[in-house]
Amino acid sequence: MGNRVADRVVLLGGSMCGLLAARVLADAFAEVVIVDRDDLTDVTGPRRGVPHGRHAHGLVARGHQILEGHFPGLTEQMRAAGVEPGDFNGDIRWYVNGRRLKPSRSGLVSVPATRPVLEHHVRRRVRNIPNVVFMEGYDVAGLATTPDGGTVTGARIQRRAEGSREEVLDADLVIDATGRGSRTPVWLADLGYARPEEERVTIGLAYTTRHYRLRSDPFGDDLAIIPAPTPDHPRGAFFYKLPGYGGRIELSLTGMLGDHPPADPEGFEAFARSLPVPEIYEAIRDAEPLDDPVTFRFPASVWRHYERLGRFPERLLVMGDAVCSFNPLYAQGMTVTALESLTLRRHLASGRLPRPAAFFRDVAANVRGPWEFSAGADLGYPGVEGRRTPRTRLANAYVARLQSAAVHDARLGDAFIRAAGLIDPPQALLRPANVARVLRHMWRRPAEDDAVTRAVRQSDAVADV
Ligand SMILES: Cc1cc2nc3c(=O)[nH]c(=O)nc-3n(C[C@H](O)[C@H](O)[C@H](O)COP(=O)(O)OP(=O)(O)OC[C@H]3O[C@@H](n4cnc5c(N)ncnc54)[C@H](O)[C@@H]3O)c2cc1C
Image (cartoon, rainbow, N blue to C red; front, top):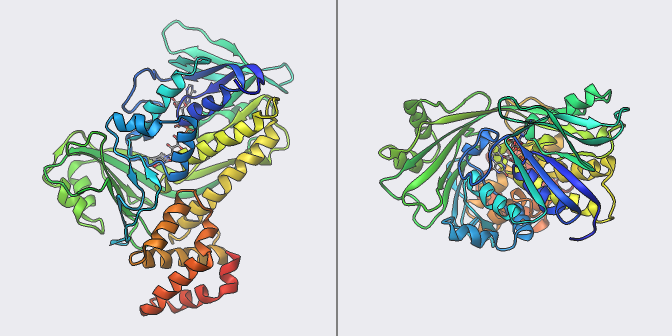
């Protein structure tokens, strides 16, 4: 154990955020207790508490690096279990507006496990940490506090079994990692605190997912085929080999602004047929379905600004989707959670309990870049409501140009994968070498939009983005 901070920390929620936080907390507390309403032991498939786990989940590159740092050998552990890692730009077929980005070896590892399989492997590692205890099948009912509500002293929990009674689990620190449905705003109000302000970007997104056994092989050596949604082609898909492949695949179809992929088999196939690339529909039309399509609706991205609160109880923190749930199309959620686990480690390094205000300030810094990247890109869809600053418009116009150029220029594809993978900040796309490549490509082709072309060429404006 590193710098011992206190005796017991209780994590509300044992999903990706809870697990990554537990890894870090185990170095600082005598006991880490994870409370979750689901049974987690040996679960390798979807579960009730994580309904989004049925749908495509990619761990972007920075998240993979952090997970491998927390759990050395995790990638090999998954490979031994049938997960086939590959290169993010070399082994995934990315399409933008129906055109394939030029592949190259980015050196960034993609681990195409399904979400439940990834979580299972991480949970296996956390279970091996001797001072981590799982309390499965318990509902979190609320917080226990000092009489004045100034300090959290534990959690009120109840076993999901007939006749069980609420009990209090004492803790030196409680961390809410219960995801998007977190009750902390309500608990704060009940204790007489303000709720955090919520920033929302309404996107009307839905995923509909089905699994198949294919009769043909559209992948070759590739791991996945991903037509990314864009304002010109808002329908998208994630088409992945399942671990152990044998022709089994996961297909998540995605639609924005109420254009939802249907869950009836005919409607699902028709939606797949409408994608701007034919190979997905061609692969599934005579494939054997392994289940029925299932839909998950995601009305809005939500950021709860805990860092703006003037008053907050001591010994309580909030992390993961409970703070910010991002548009899942950009695959940032698990990686931001991983970044927050590093923030937590930094705050524990002093040997004292983290102070909520300072912690939330740093979590907001983890969230801000990815939020601006995804919420800014969402504003490129005319139907998404929100204020479009000149900076947002210019950034979206530039990224569209960059993606178009990346069809011919693998270096630009790599640059984009690095920014989307949270390895480089989005501003890296504006490095002079990248801007020069984008402009070179634009000059080679007739400009489709003179206003945008002019805007992008104004280097002083570009430098401000
Ligand atoms: C459709 C979809 C696709 C996504 N795709 C990606 C992707 O490709 N890449 C990516 O990085 N991220 C993706 N995400 C986001 C990702 O799922 C989350 O960021 C990630 O799961 C971290 O969430 P979390 O652990 O904070 O919360 P959750 O995963 O929501 O987990 C919350 C946990 O708390 C438990 N819980 C909740 N309430 C209670 C209670 N009252 N009592 C007891 N237990 C409780 C639940 O059982 C659950 O285990 C996607 C999200 C969605 C919706």
